[in-house]
Length: 329
Image 1 (spheres, rainbow, N blue to C red):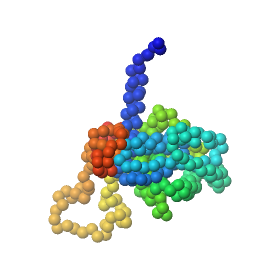
Image 2: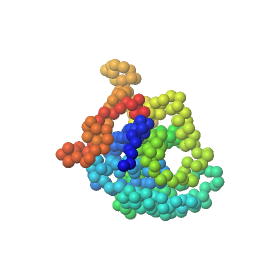
Image 3: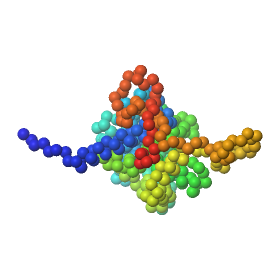
Image 4: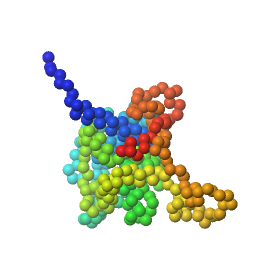
């Protein structure tokens, strides 16, 4: 008879922490989907899978949520083979086949175009992203997809905000949900509330077949990398600052900025009645530590559950307790 060895305390703790991380990420993805109404009943969603940690986590989390969501939606994975030298073309098809996920692999030599047109040492991001977007939108139309899901996370949104402030003179980030310029596609970012470090740890625990990219993130002169390093340094020295910055993105007061297109400063007039607190009375109240999050779980649960009957889900979204910043971290 084979001897059974008890599971060590360290192994039990590691498994417990892994389960906590998975539940937290599923909760944050469900919250983002609910807050921005990213997914509707009957949606066919094209999940863009680059082979990196973030897109792998996106597909995995959406697959998990699809089993308990109060709406039914379909996922199809999409990968653009950019013909980078040494790209392991078999890895993603083998992985997706094992997981039973329908997929489409599109082969386009965008790598060669970027290398030909961009001088050595210059940033390739702008041209590379434009080429990819064109292929993504075309394939989404061919597949009949109603939504396109991208793997950008909370840190990507913040980095883009600061990049546009420092180098573009705009208060502009990545939208969790947007309509493309031609109006034909809706793009969603279900990882908008997720921290990059959590996604990296999740990818490690899930042992996704990560494929490195020789274009994105591999250039030493990227301004985005400098912004990433700055945010990481702030978080080390001032824990909670990055989370507060993200909360600020969701709590905008146009009357206290300076954009005349967002607020009609020219028509401001004195009021005969006393507002009570001077300038402060124009501000919205600060959000409480606990607020209602719309998530895809019945009230009182923190993890995906078996799909309940229709009468148990009269509304698409559910309300649960939203943890304060210290709890999220």
